[in-house]
Image 1 (cartoon, rainbow, N blue to C red):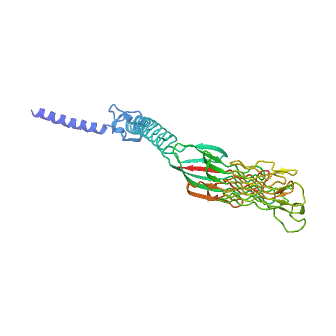
Image 2: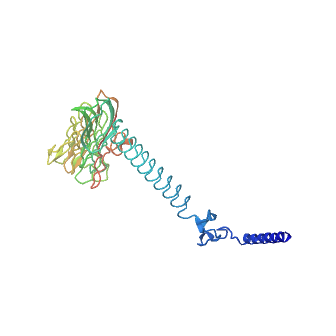
Length: 421
């Protein structure tokens, strides 16, 4: 028995010794040493190696492509991520809430996209095809005749307009006259047709400017007068003066006379063209009278008076006076180069044309008068002053009188009409 006990004791001692050896020789965990998670070896002899071994979890060597938490196929942050990736159901390209086909904010978004029913191009409330909010502004700045109809439910429109500026002449300082400005609120019936005539600025040497109109049928509801044209001589600038008068409110501005310039010699104006007076401005009851001329030269012509809707002419050759067509309604006209007078501007009544001697000298054409129908409210009529148009701060160049005429300058500014309801 004692021998048996001795043998058992020896066996236990040997087993403990063997166990100690096993513990000492047991490999460390995979990845305990640098590089073990990428050396393609099973360093801890557990049948798993590199990134397949859980001991390598968190190693920088294992933050690779197929990582279920951070890789490209990561279900939380990768390219196919269900929350933020390209196919993400909440924020990706096909995202039902914010992507290209997003029903709330994408290109086909029903609330804010291109076909958005509230703010897009086909927006039913504020867009081009808006069926509920009325169009608020119409603007016309190309000379000619146009018509418009206020929508149903509109009972008044506010119209602002400038007439056409007169063209410059070729005498020294013979600028064209600026146009008048007119504004009023006009009672209307929704659906009725109204007509606007946008004034033409003086286009040729000395032409008076056309007027701008608002018409109901043939009834003039609002008129902004045109300016008169500048005078011309036959020596292209050796005479001075003859500025066109501006379109007026109730009274057009007179055209300027040919100026008398003190010596030295030769006297200006010389005896052959002693004087040439400008046309007279129109009133709201009659056209302006034509200017006159005195001197020793032949081929003298007085300017023609203005008429309803028309400026007086200052044209003629070889003593045959009044051969041209004056400014009429929205169209400019009435002037002449080479010793022709400035034409009168059109308006409710037109300004008078200037007196002139063909090939020698001329005065300036006069401005027309403006008008607002008594049934209008909040009416404003503002005349210009020489080359400057009425209400210049808002004119944006409309109705400005032309500079002294040359190959590149001299035309008067076209009119403009704006309609608001």
